[in-house]
Image 1 (spheres, helix red, strand yellow):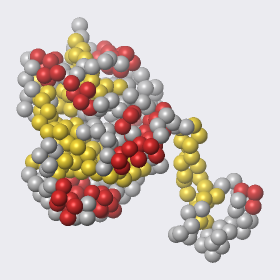
Image 2 (cartoon, helix red, strand yellow):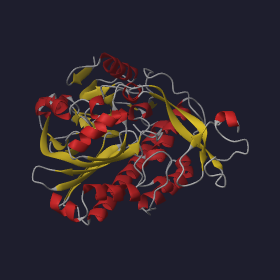
Image 3 (cartoon, one colour):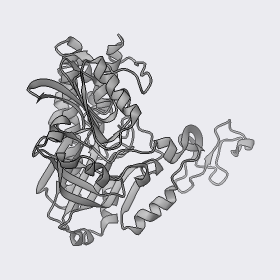
Length: 443
């Protein structure tokens, strides 16, 4: 008989996903944290203890996605001396790359790249160039770089992202192998409520996945270290305290006197005394917390939330978008975009294929995002509200607005005495990729 520990209001679809995954792997213990919502196969905010399996679908595509926070001795006055929060956030987005497939603005050599080039799981070695180009990039979706202030007025830096394209292709490769395809093959992903992909511990695929997953986790840690170090350099500060953790990963752990592989997806480890950085929405406070020895925490496999948890899908919030190819004028001060339905005056482009305002500049093909269905979130109103609260936002979009998330204090309250909040961090500056950036590597 299986035991599932739940926190907060339970979403039935998420619970059904967790039960399906547990049944497939004969798992005895599972947890749904208060920020849970449906994911691919295994719910986000869920953890499962398998005795004989590891699960690439459970860990998910963004292997090693997690958070890092660093406390400095700076105060708000020190930020003002640097030109204010706006100037700091501008420099962050100038030096750090956000979005899909964008190479790092500043390349960084790191020992993890040598480990990728000589990976134990040989197919990962072919991903070395991708890993090198994206190391220290942040991605899009709910991934961010934050500058925050704690109760004592000290400045913190916080980041959230994972293993980028390297981890995504690693996960995709193992899902392909599970279907009998080559590592480079394209697996049929299936529906959201698909059964889990499980590899037996000790099998060739199981051992290969563990080695590859752990390397992707090292890569994610290195990326977050690099980004935090770069922000500290911008601030002219040093870290006097750091908190760093994955929330998409599998660990070998002891629970109830036995050894398990605990598969956590959007689920932060929280053993007694173990610290974690958990972010709220772009307009909400974040926290530094630690696990507490309690019956509830033990039943939760010593796990807690990784964020506030979505209550609205991206398409519900922002509407439905489609990508189309268009023609854009090459002139740097123009910005005009034309239909791509042939070079004709009817499409708004002269037959010679030139911009009417800048005939000597020529045109280039570009991808643009076009809204085909409106969303529920008034994004300009959100931006104005954040501005009124003194939060400097660079990037972001309606799909990441505060109203698409639960409130973090309420989510944490549902976990009772299983965790203790050590610091509450108020957002001063938030940097994210814009809504028009498509990114398959987000969690």
